Image (cartoon, rainbow, N blue to C red; front, top):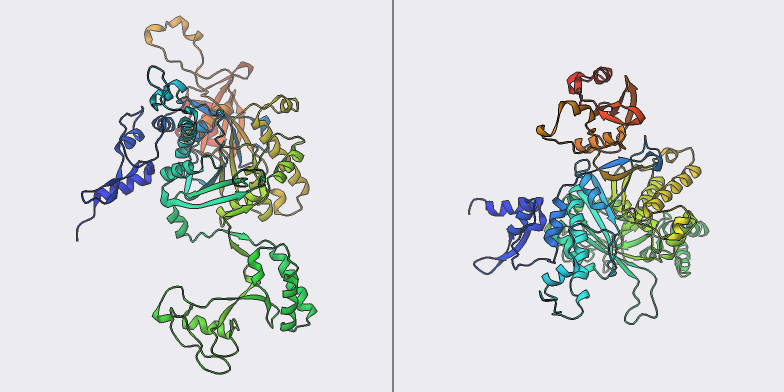
Amino acid sequence: MTSRDMTAANIEALAELFPNVVTETIDIEGNPKSSIDFDLLRQELSDHIVEGPQERYQLDWPGKRAAAFAANAPIAKTLRPIRDDSVDFDTTKNLFIEGDNLDALKLLQESYLGKVKLIYIDPPYNTGNDFVYADDFAESTAEYLVKSEQVSETGERMVANSESNGRFHSDWLSLMYSRLKLARNLLTDDGVIMVAIGDQEHANLRNLMDMVFGGENFLANVVWQGRAKNDARFSAGGIDYMLIFGRNRGALVGKDARWKEPKKGYSLVLSAVRDCWERADGDAELATRLLRDWWKTSPDTEKGLQSYSEIDSNGRAYLRGPLASPNPRENLKYEILHPESFKPVPMHPNGWRYSRETMDNLLADGRIVFGKDELTSPRRKMYLDEQDDQAIRSLIVKERAPASEALSRLLDGKFFDYPKDVDVLVTWIRAATQNNNDALVLDFFGGSGSTAHAVMNLNAEDGGTRRFILVQLPEKLDAAAQQQGYSTIADVARERLRRVGTQMNLSATETSTGSQDRGFRSLKIDTMSKTDTLRSADALQQLEIEQLESSIKPDRTGEDLLFQAMLDAGLELTLPITREERDSFEIYDVEEGALMMCCRLRERNSLSLSLSGTRSRACRTAAVAHGLPRRGVRA
């Protein structure tokens, strides 16, 4: 009865850009409605921390505004390639980034905006220890205690047990908030993020992800049951969780995304069915009895498979499925006659599950099972050989010790107490990247490299070409690890991937899996390659020009400059690169002309960008050689 509510439409538009600014208020009639938190919106559009807290329904903590500011603030950093730490640098599509993940996420914003299909992270659990991610915006303990009213301005304690009364959670929330905000930008419209978490911050993380991704995009809460502790006081514990959100749940539903997993013991049951059929010599009743006897031996299979306990005259195992419609529909109400008495069988009040035409086809194919007479409602045959997968289960029951032991064997030493189980990660990566075997997977809390290992295993299993980006802080390891040549966690993760790739290459047959990508380009976060050479005219004298410093830092290579240019141009960092030298120039060509760069070589391998631009003879020659317009080359 009215024109479109533009205020509501604007709120929806803002929610797409900034889901965290949407909150709840009460209208004049006392009903809750969606509205915009203008303080938070101002923060999103501001280059400084905005003041002005108001009381409203939201997750709040000291440092929240500073964390939002940190996510939006620019940084003067770049990514430098490290060939010596890489594997198949020139051909791989995988990335390993060493450095703080907040910086990494900012640097990836242009090149990978909306390109990541799956983000899996296992962030540090909040055990009360200091975080190695010491963000610059963190408050001092003294500042925090005053702001949170745990002590007065004169230093008197106002509440007991102050350590557990806020900051314990606030620091962790600030750590995650800025990173999740940036991570959301990288996801495809149908992208998915999975975050592993323990009991301590599970509730806060759920609220935080509701705020960042929107509560309507919640997909699942997975429970991982590890080894239980019999000496625990209240419950056996050993539980971890995985919270899963979509970038846009509607996009996933629109593509009819259905996450499936293989049924445990499926092939074992199929083998038993074949054996029973052969032993029964084509007698369906005898084969059924033999199969039911086999089930009594309690084989190690998915419990749902036990319902497939009958074998028909075609030698196929089946279960009896429902034929009732889940919702009442008049066009699904019709008579079905019993094949012997020719009398109507009982119909469910809602009608049948299928249309008359489909039901006739099922009857003709012998897929409907009738009772002895018309008093029993028929059922549908659901064949085992057509049900090889199932909806993925949200409960994982698996010990963590085998994963730790396997990693220790691979690395010839124990460097991690609780690495993630690669097989479990394979299950969830497979589900989230179904029908998208070249998907990009990101883990910005890379740790020991389990996510990348799982991607490589899954590709080897199904022939996929999934790619990964792993980010890990160069966190120092203990003395024992350093004696074995591993200075940081990043060193261990890279070595793990090298060894996994080597093992796969050695075991690969002459199939497509033998040519799969098992390398990675190793990059390191560092300061910008350019130096600040800004001087006022009055500060310069003509005789000093030759003494001026270079605009390029002396320790940087042409490849360093190239990767900075690729970031500036928003190009993916795994594009193919060719290099040649001509007339004392280095000429780089990224993906046959997507970007070209000329660097003038100097003594001792130092360099500078050519200042002559397209007038440079080397640049013009390179442009013509690649069929590009001479004035289209950036130098």
